[in-house]
Length: 71
Image (cartoon, rainbow, N blue to C red):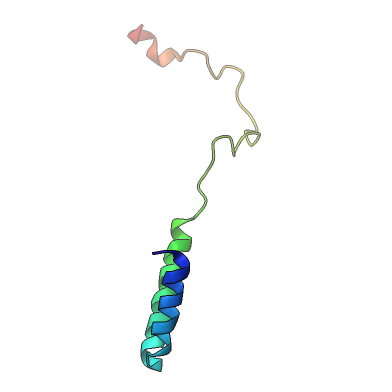
């Protein structure tokens, strides 16, 4: 079934429903849309924090004296 046919079918069925049922359907749709927004939250991308490092000690990669026994 195509999206167009599905939407048309749903519109026809919605016309026959009483107001309380329509309100309940509306609440369910709104709830699902909120959940979908949370699911589609943008996640971090590789390299998005580049340039934020402010300082790194010059001896950062130097071997630590605490681990000399393990050599």
